Length: 190
Image 1 (cartoon, rainbow, N blue to C red):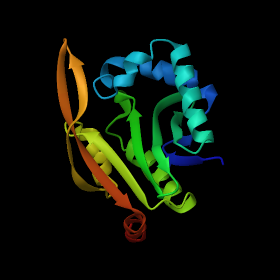
Image 2: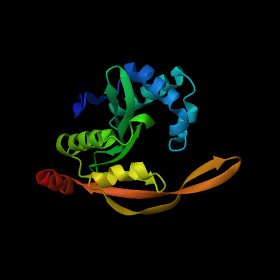
Image 3: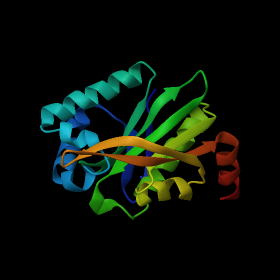
């Protein structure tokens, strides 16, 4: 199944492919300092080969029906990635994860990308529930969920363990949920 979605302003959201590895690596490498606090895996992507391995892994997860990742493209540049993680067709649900190059944040790009992927998930994949988990201090990520009509359902206390300067620190995560009928109602109003 192919997935492509125009999200405005010359931006395209499409299914992640192995050929996207180099462009994604360039983006992660130039924005490493801004991404690292929110995405612990960034430190594991030290080379273009590491990104290629990661993309291959995500493509395998797509083929097995476990996940679906889409890259946000502008020309030849990859601006970020958005994914259905923990794709569960039996229970008709998925968890949405995303990241965007810091210089492009605050422009509505991720909200548009998430709306495109949500529409595909609810209308084409026939999912019933979407979930977003974001660290409580990640204001931008939480704002995307709220703009899209997600409901904060709770806080997972000390959900994430980080090691900073040899010390363990724990971070809370806010959990947001959106149901298919809520999405449809929001689309009918909009």
